[in-house]
Structures are given as C-alpha cells and as structure tokens.
Length: 311
Image (cartoon, rainbow, N blue to C red):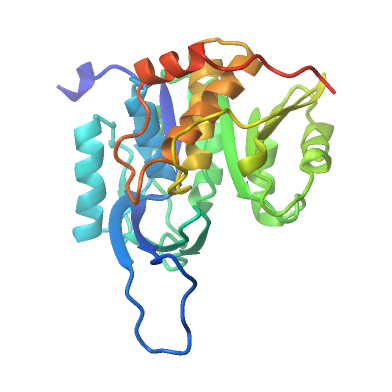
C-alpha cells in the first residue's frame, strides 16, 4: 500500500544518530583526578533527527533521507521515526555504523559538542528513490551531510523551496559549504562564532538578493536578512528554565519554515514562532522527545511581542 502514501510536505536531508549527553554535576571537570561522576543520557539526535521530529510534532507530513547503520543505535533512531510517523523510504545504510555524538552539558545550558566524523564518507543515496520521496513535496530542509549537496539540484528541478542550515559558520567562503549556499533559497546559520552576524548576512544576500537569511544568536535572539535589510529580534520572554540547547537551532528553523513556507505566515511572525519553538526545545533535558506541538506553539504565539522595526 506504499503507493497510497500521501506525499510529504517537507523532506529533511541530513545527519541522524545517537547523542550521548554528558551532564556535568554543577562544576567544571576536575582534570586533576581520574574519575568524574556525570549523568549520561542517550537520545536519537543530530540535526536530521531534531528537524524531522520537529516537523512531525507540528503535525506536518515529513520524510527523512539519511544514513544509519544496521546496529542498536540505528534501531533507536528508526523506532523514534516510526513512533512519529516519519517517512523513511529514503533511508540508506552506512556500513561504518550509526553516527554518535558526545555533548558535554554545563549546568547553565552551555555545551561542547564532539561530532562523529567516521560515518557517511563517500556514501550516496539512491537518486531514483530520492526523487520519488521528494516528488510532490513543497520544501526540502537540508543539513551539511556531504551526500546531501548532490540532491539539491534535483530538489530545485522538482520545484521545491530549498532551505539549508549552515550551522556554526566560521568562514562564509568555506569551500565545503558553497554548494549548499548556492542552491538555497533560505539559509540558516548560527552566529556563535561572530559577535555581529550582519556582515555574513550581507555576504549571503550579495549573489541572491531574493534569498532569506536567518541567523540564530542564542541569548541575543536572532537576525533576519532580506533584500529590504536586516531585522534584529530579541529573544522571546520565557519563565521556563534553560536546560539543554541541543536541537534549539533546528527548532528555530523548523518553526520558521513551517510558519512561513508551509503556512504562508509573514516573515516577522514566522521568526517569532521559530524562536518560541527553539525556546521550548531548551527545556528538554537530554532528549529529542517532547518537541513543541502545533497547538502549544499557537498558544505561545498569541502572547508573543510585536516585531521590532527595521533598523
């Protein structure tokens, strides 16, 4: 009955695996002693998982194209996708095994991530199956897996809006990211390595002024760049604790893209909804379960402050 499956609205391309979140017990690591006691929590994670589960939580039809190993960690991710109703027809096997990440978590919400670089080198998904999965979708949301770059021209050919998360950019001229930048209608990036994201936003708009650029600025909020200029949005006020920032950038992108591309909401409203989704994600401790649902996001957005003026 697979032929009766409705087309996904959004297709996520990217990394999936298991995150081990190491929560430090209220202090820095004591390197003078051999043993330190921490709380270590495993969860299906990485950008492709957070994005796919985020769309599913918002009630959108989502497909995931990505690589997993035939191992226990891969089974954990597959089970999570199955519970959420994520279309995994585009999943392909990585003989190196499922990627793992280690995230050292500080009590104030800061983190240090150690990503698994061994997996997916030289892998390519089946182009015919990818075309089948993407046909009829409206949006492709790509991350930086090397194989994903080869699917972006296909997505454009099929008429999809192409969005890409460049993550924590250091050099906007980085050769690895150029294919992703060139093919994207909407770009996201973290400003973690830049005190002011405005120069990068202008750089990304230079060749394609019609592009939309969103920069996550953490506790400073975020910035939105279009041909009309750059708008800065403060963080949405919240009394909720900031526990874990893993997946927050993915939630910002999912909230924005769902609101603007799939629901047709204005840019400023979509930015606020993305920020609210990200803030909710920061309340989840060591897990990709419990991402914000549509009704909860709608309720929070009703109390959201108006957008700032262009400056």
